[in-house]
Image (cartoon, rainbow, N blue to C red; front, top):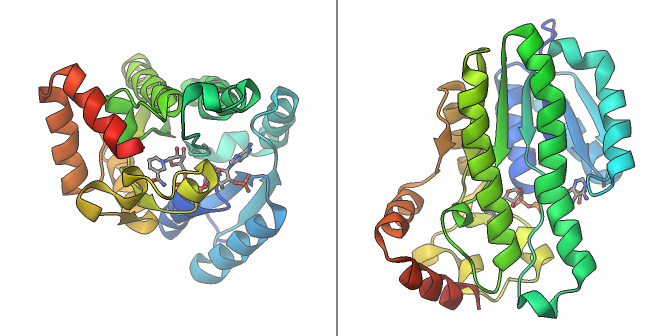
Length: 262
Ligand SMILES: NC(=O)c1ccc[n+]([C@@H]2O[C@H](COP(=O)([O-])OP(=O)(O)OC[C@H]3O[C@@H](n4cnc5c(N)ncnc54)[C@H](OP(=O)(O)O)[C@@H]3O)[C@@H](O)[C@H]2O)c1
């Protein structure tokens, strides 16, 4: 383990963007606490980080859709909490298709992980960071946060929540020297779309066929966090898309997104 005792916590660290974010903070010398459910994948990520960056790694396997599991996780974090300087709420899932075509339990699971877990863990860590008068919180939203998303309606709405929640927190916590940043990736090459059942959609193929790597997204996200950027949209095409959505009438944004998501 490196001599410094700073920790970064990353949820959803067993795969995709979370794994890449873990590498980005580890290369800056942070020891890492990795959270996800898949213990084998967590072990693999842990071995990679130790081998490549020589940092200390702690893995915690918890299900963030379950309130009692989140409470156990917060207890497990307590021994390290004074050393935690960065907290990244990245874990999230997608749910594609018509709203009524997905079960209500799938909808609730989506809200539990994408919103409830992020709000619960943000509340937990913000109080510690305020007491310490420093800290960095990153919440992973999406380019989907900037418009409604027919055929992916609940997912897009969860990401709008995370974006607006994080922007609000950023203002509230600034006076305590606590930085909040929302990372808003466009389509990224991870297992996300396979898991969400959306591999055949235009969304999975990316705007103009452009799909960023998880490493590119994570590098932009962590750079933005430490530069105290409240909203980080990685990639020029995604930035253009974000500004275009702002200028387009809402009916048009809805129609285009429906085409992309089907
Ligand atoms: N890929 C994209 O195109 C894209 C675009 C914009 C935003 N995002 C956002 O980026 C974030 C990361 O997604 P990704 O693309 O990296 O997808 P991913 O590779 O599927 O990673 C999702 C991570 O979340 C964890 N996770 C899922 N359910 C969980 C649960 N119930 N409890 C604890 N951990 C759980 C997974 O670990 P386990 O399965 O081991 O639990 C995994 O580590 C998400 O918030 C997603 O909405 C992705």
